[in-house]
Length: 146
Image 1 (cartoon, rainbow, N blue to C red):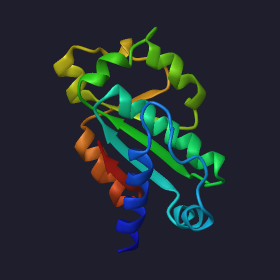
Image 2 (image 1 turned 120 degrees about the horizontal axis):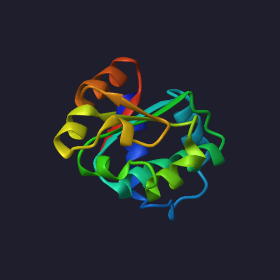
Image 3 (image 1 turned 45 degrees about the vertical axis):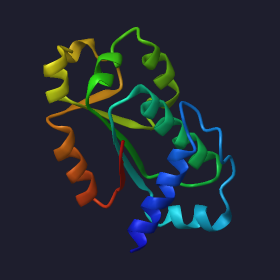
Image 4 (image 1 turned 60 degrees about the vertical axis):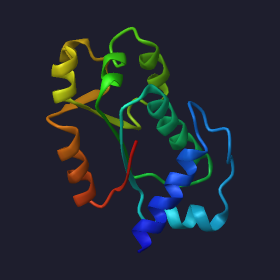
């Protein structure tokens, strides 16, 4: 039940975000305290908007004193084509490099014709997005799917 409540809270935070967090800028003390209980977060997504939104939520949590142990984005679908060297997302991601792990689905890469050497630095390739998310859940991550 506690995990469901925490997950719902994170969903509410994400719904308030687009490419940047425009809604809530300050978390109340109880919310921050609740989020401290499980400091590992995993997201699976398929769009550029959600990629930027999840990174912006990282900023929101940090700015509100939430300690994050692990923060991982698992990417699948067409957004994989935007994770290449020289892209706008590469520039956007620089601020998060070394802080946020991004795992890219190799199945999506293969289907979309994106070779691993075309991905920008700081990304990891995972065999399948779904299995990676199951692994994160098995390791106690709060997870959301977009």
